[in-house]
Image 1 (tube, one colour):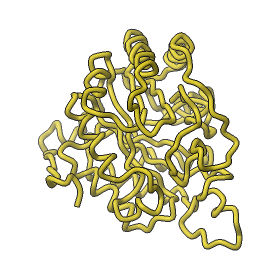
Image 2 (tube, helix red, strand yellow):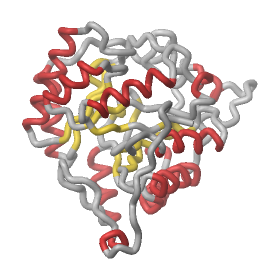
Image 3 (cartoon, helix red, strand yellow):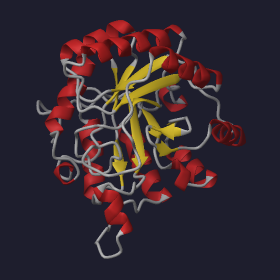
Image 4 (tube, one colour):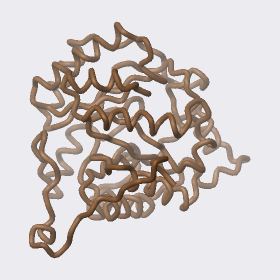
Length: 312
């Protein structure tokens, strides 16, 4: 996961270090050059990654025509390396999604973050329906959906269930569901609340390995064919705790020294972890393996269709 345009976002996501509304360590930077991004993608491929994701700190693509053309060239270049290509660029309209698909985009990341009920406590500049509309545009264009959430936003357990219910009752299950543990950043509302002993911060950044394992295991049960991606927050968990999460159903990670702006285990550390656990990376453009019980006809996977509103 590479941040191709960092900081300067006008959204007010209370966990995000890239918002112009929060005073954090992040300094806005311009969009990276196409060749710089392609060189980073080659390094990722050489290190064993099979999907390369590019993130830009925008509310939406809007009328950023020049920047969008550069991104389309990035997508074409990464796709030409034989890698799966993912982007997270904020809200998309149907035509932008179609152009990304034509350029070779494999997947688009647009997280719901939490339940519809708790969402207004976290973000006010974009509605839940806005996010669902982007997901629908991505799906309609034939692009795989990468959509998950964050634990530690001050949510209740019912909100975690609510998020999974929304994801599992979409017209089609997301192909990838990232499960993140909040990395509290000083200067963000949630980061400051977590650090202030005088503030009731119950449920903020207070996520342990069992919380993650429960969320991952439930996601695996309700979305059996989905790649459940162990994402932000891995540095706070030991190898044994991460193994618990893999055993609970996680079958993917985000690799790279940074996840947009927050620290992540180094490539070498993840390589050593996978060797220790006996894990082998799947080839690009290949889905998860079918379970032996399904191959033998002992279980049957059925689709769950959502309502017209796409969530309950």
